[in-house]
View 1 (cartoon, rainbow, N blue to C red):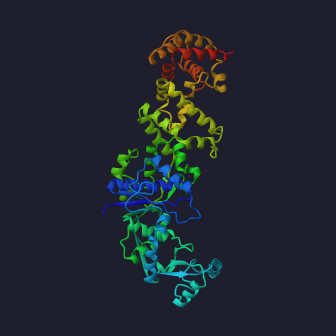
View 2 (tube, rainbow, N blue to C red; view 1 turned 45 degrees about the vertical axis):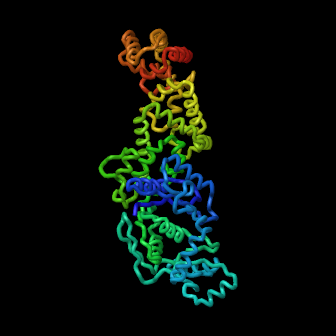
View 3 (cartoon, helix red, strand yellow; view 1 turned 60 degrees about the vertical axis):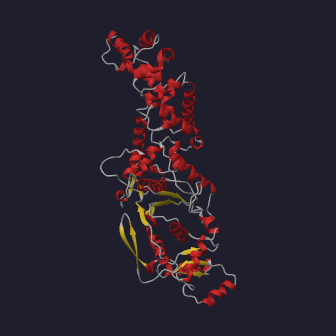
Length: 517
């Protein structure tokens, strides 16, 4: 049987890092093994089901570029792929009846008040908390019939066998033993007739011929229930792969302050899907050796279960920034612009930045203005539509320094605006030098008349330095940079002068002269 894996989210919220890693592992393993990756919607919790959440999952995975072989939006031979639709088709009824007939499940008519009293009694008497049978595990048929005749609501629970060890074979941790006496009897069918995750997921995994279940290690405590269901039905269980927990770079539980957030937020922030997948794949998995930057093809060819580690995987946003910057620098400038245009076309990008709140403000730094960040990015993309060649030159000059697509907007702003914003501190520091007025006159006369090469621009500034007996080039470079860009840092001065050209140089030097006292 070929490898078949499934990504089966419950659409009650947003797609975050943990879920993305799970589906990425599913995808990489299926591709590596030449198998199939199935998308299944586990929507039996109708009270919490959110149709917008399901659409969020679909849109996010579309952007990430994870393709499925079967699913509710694709179809396939094992449909339907929404559990609510499978319930309506009567798929689960047959199997719960089989469990009841074999004595492995029973109806329980406890009220919510009775269950609360049971838990309170267990707490007071320091007993194991949970449902271990109550009045219904061993009730006789006449009692059950009477309760049904009285119209009492019931659930159907699994009858956990007592006094035995339940063995779960985990692909990462090996053999895990559980004492059945401390396992409560879980609900398989709820009072509204809907199956619970425990029951529906395992039935579906069997019917859809799932061979491997990738999921977080938080599912280990309930894994004996799932393994036992396969045993009671006489089915071969899939391979359980409980992936390690994700923690922050500081070793603490992953939270938003570590950078963990909605996956679409990473898109809006300007991360490339290629870099994000590379980064997420390496959280808890290693291809061996020191390699870190990998293409999708390399991830697929290298991915094996043996590379997964039981120890926690670290989410380090600085590593993601490094990988993203590395990927940006490896691309052609034309490809970078196309990625920027794609990011601009995503409706969520604008929404994210226009509702952005700087919750992690850097000390001694101004608060990030989301609307301004988006406006700068939008201006560059729109500018490139009518000034493509010049825009490409601007992007190329910043490509070595920028780590996120969205940051190109602010980085390239001075290139495309008529009057870049002037840093008052830089103006005060450099425009007060005694040689600056003469320097600006020299720039207009030698650099503002015709297009020069990068080396020629350097020669003109060195020429002024030599003629005026200035020991170092810094006092020439810094005021020139401020005059042309409004700031003290950026790409190489002579390179940016070659991009700006004589007309822009002249206009900016004229403006700079108005700041010289």
